[in-house]
Amino acid sequence: KNEVEQSPQNLTAQEGEFITINCSYSVGISALHWLQQHPGGGIVSLFMLSSGKKKHGRLIATINIQEKHSSLHITASHPRDSAVYICAVNSGGSNYKLTFGKGTLLTVNP
Amino acid sequence: KAGVTQTPRYLIKTRGQQVTLSCSPISGHRSVSWYQQTPGQGLQFLFEYFSETQRNKGNFPGRFSGRQFSNSRSEMNVSTLELGDSALYLCASSFNGQNGYTFGSGTRLTVV
Image (cartoon, rainbow over all chains, first blue to last red):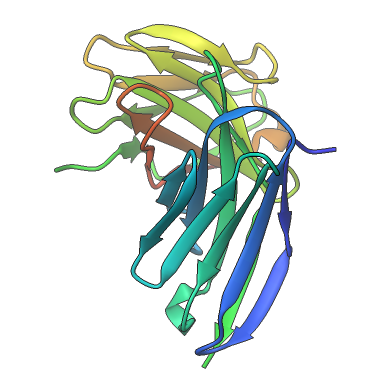
């Protein structure tokens, strides 16, 4: 079983829909990251969370440490949101590495 | 402020050759980590350097190595290339290795 599980693997939505991507992890973490990767490979860090909730524009990320679960929400989705969204965690302590989920391919149709 | 710069962007090598990839972090960032991305395995951690010291290494064979210089620039080397080493290699820099990662655009390596 992977340390970081994402669902769904693929998601197709119509423009304007509310999107939710889920991430569950099985290890103790110091932080959880949501990343966005567009075709061509470049990765952009969207959020880093250790507790609670963060919002940036139409994107909202939440984390529940007790349940070891995080969600990324996109409100009023737009075709430019089409990308792969990746959840990654820093395991706590001196483990200076990221462990990644397999990613969620989001396609938003106009 | 300048982002994370990876060179070269694309590389084609023959099996058995070796390759060196470079990563220049954001000014002030002392941690550089390296990742391999393939369609089958996704993103996997290779190693992380902080102030010229390797602090963590992923589960890759010894053919994969790296180093970091005093100016925080980092290089990774893959020797005796195999077809399976074809991948996108990404580096990321951060201030301390745990927070606020900035990724480079990657080097796409093709081994033929």
